[in-house]
Image (cartoon, rainbow, N blue to C red; front, side, top):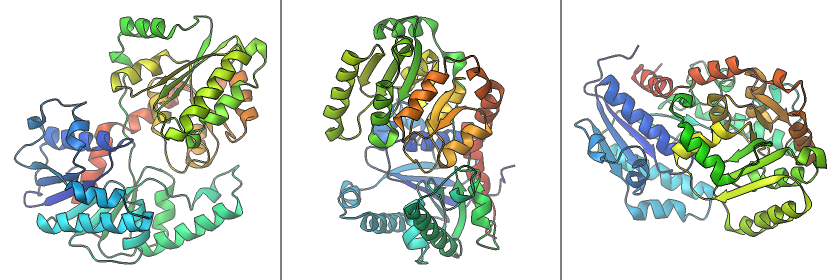
Length: 418
């Protein structure tokens, strides 16, 4: 239960990111604080463009700016200094000093970094001092991956793992570090073994169950606009379109499908190309595929609203997430589970573990186009339904509600430091 003696407490949440789930996370926290009437003052320090981004949720921003919630944009020159830094280390140090400035300015008691990974590896590991207690979200711990079954790590990966373990060993001993929030449910135990204090906790990755809001007419209109062949199984690749998300490996895999399977497959590539230099190679591969294969492929390189996203997931039969040795969680797995759709994804690291644990679908070596092609072919077999479990999917989604995400954060930062 949330403690109610927080009246004089001042909390700063610091997040200069606007990509991925960061705006979503902040929205969940703001709404939860208002709904639960949590006492104390909340300062949210963000990029200057944050208010434009959050308008996708709330058009009247006065609803957010209550007597105890303040949205504070940093100066544009401060953000520019971070984004134009000549190295990741330099950007991290600049980020640290900006956060320190606002923590001092508002005399806060606690600062939560919504992306702590790089801060942990430099300022915290080196035990730099801060004006208040520090907590934050760790997205990419991987030093425990060697303990996962069926994973063969390269020498370079093992070196990275040991380096990261040493940094965590030092950072966890920082006297001002209060809580490490980990989206990976397997890593808190490994982190807490590095210290006598239990500073690491699992943080639910928020996703809402959306099936009940799907508009059937809108779904039918989307299907017509895509000109989908009704006899084909629909495979959805959604989100950032980039090499690290496996788009090139997927396109190569589609070219390996035999004619019989190709005629049964429709692939939706929906999202924005991350790097401009990838646009021409991707479009060329798609055009070549259209001429050489019977696969129906629909490519939409544009921003997609949340409402449209839910329609795409509802339309899909299978969700594709062929990430390339991705470290950390993926919201795509949760969105697929929320929609009750099986996935074809990577067997590497946390993603592979979550697919196995919750029976989300097929986990394969997505670095190999032939493995992806084999998984696509397997979805047409009679045994495919045995590799995913709709009940387990919904259990996992229920454990990762927006309320559980926000409650975990507030519960922990109110808890006295050990």
